Length: 298
Ligand code: R5P
Image (cartoon, rainbow, N blue to C red; front, side, top):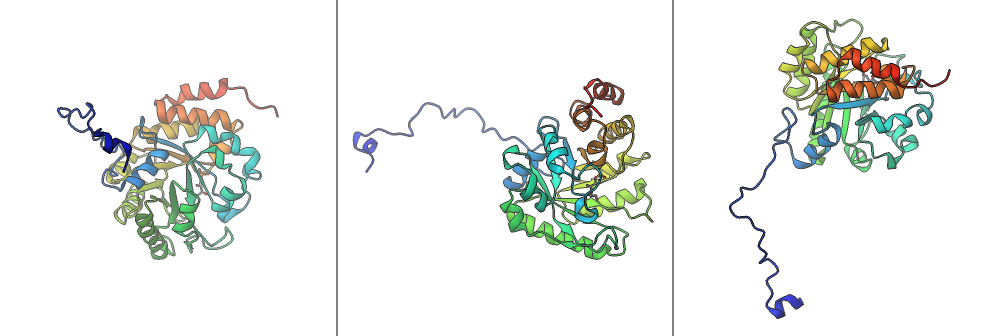
């Protein structure tokens, strides 16, 4: 029997119960995610900064279907120095285990679908990672491509719903990535359709492209957070303007790859994107900030 009980001390008789103070309960601040299990919320809170409710995800998963993409030839040299400025890293388990330092403490959004290379029909994907392995990697979320209107639409939706079922069991959120084939128009009508289907079928957050007209209707119709995809490399001011408009019109941040790592100065660019996303810096101001950073020689 513990000594305290012999002495008659009551170890629970402190004076700090504050019975008149209602228990504090903070609602989870992310759109549509308040009813998720604690583990899911905790992982999402690693990706989305609680103070802004937004994220700057750095996407470097391109190699899973197109090999060593320009700027990603040596992830150890080009990407690892960017990690302190990213809120999360979207990448593959191969790159995580071979190259991403565990001590970087960067939340991983793990690419979990794949199959076809850029030489084949891209929509013919399968799940490529088990949820058990995602948990072993300590993934903050898993990502799956969804090809609405694509040749293998149903298969890709099935990949997502299976991943959501597994994610629910492990408390790992699923990011649905709306992939737009060459033949489809990236307008608000299409993006509303694709993002809403992903959310209705259980995706915890969705990645989608920006469209110049009515993007606010895309974010409004999607009941979970949307992150804006970057797409092909644009001049820096244009990319910052697109990110600014996307968050002003309801996106919960960005998931950008080439517009960061193919920039002349990737560190300056990801810092400028961060200013837009987290501080609502105007595009011109963020671009000035980008220009003021000392550019690397060559
Ligand atoms: C897109 O479907 C994949 O997730 C890409 O590999 C990547 O995320 C695209 O990033 P970005 O278009 O910004 O280079």
